[in-house]
Length: 462
Figure 1 (cartoon, rainbow, N blue to C red):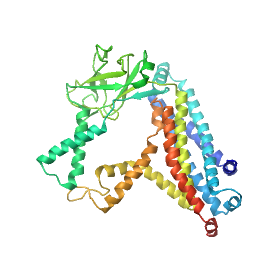
Figure 2: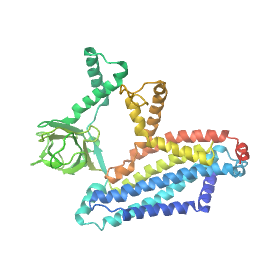
Figure 3: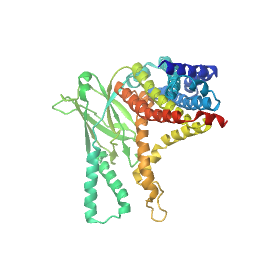
Figure 4: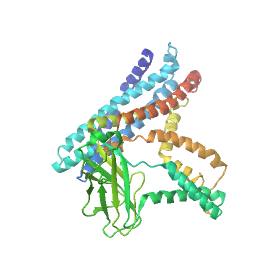
């Protein structure tokens, strides 16, 4: 480890010598302080938090991510191109120790920068929150500057697929379907099955039974919050729809209901407080919605109904969020060093940025997988093409999307800006999947390529 730490120290010295550390630190602080001054909030707790947390943390992640890729690609590639690596390689130190030392140096550099910028965000948030009106501060500390756990009704994708298959087989018995059209027909049936679980017709009710699990003992005497979202195919004259709610399962539990319909807008999230102790002895909370409107409303299975409950303080939750961003930076460091292990600095930078573009294009990959083809629809028939490209690329897309999902599932910015709890288990899972698994794959590939690279040949081309 002494040799690895020595290489990490040299990486730090290079960053300080070229003023890179100071430049990045200044840019991060300017982003943290400048964005809230340039972009004004709407005076609400949500708007205030969106400016302070969403924009600043997103800016920190973007700036730190780009600088991490640039530094990780440059620190190794330039050492090779400028013949500096031979001074180190002739010492009694293994190639893998050089590689890991570079990684450790950049990761520790990121840790300090993230601590500085994160501390500025937290301090600015507390400073500006103290200047808000008392009622806004109350909302802020109840809904945003807090760690709230989440509970949803358990959905069974396997049951949806089984029901889809049953309907499909019934349809195939009554009418023939071309083989090329089978994926699209299955997709339509799946959406119909899901719609039956999500749509609440006029004058009908929809009931959710949400299990609060092991936290039920901690929630005795504490009010909870419902976070709801629905969609509507039709517009109302007022732009809102009525919503009647009843929470509880009498006579097993106490109950609470709305005396008059709530006026809620579609396609947006709404949060409201419900009294404590409405769940039963098993921790199951029963929520019933009655639709008094003349049009059907659709509550998405993924985020249509959610129960939020207090789960700790904001400071530690914020620290865990920064921990997840740190995991992202460790992964980007491994990616940049892996590219620099076998490519020149410009090509390595281009390769690393191209990998990021693939990550940001995950929605396109998912659409291609969902449609069953990478080709556009046929202009004459309107059907998606099925070719040799599909056979080759679709499995590759699935593999890439699976890897991307391991990383993109952990997004602390949205959780922090909405007062969601980031648990220690989520942080541990992010470290295991993002740093150890995906980052470990990049690291193993980078160390292997760097160990096999002929440094003299690379130097002689300059």
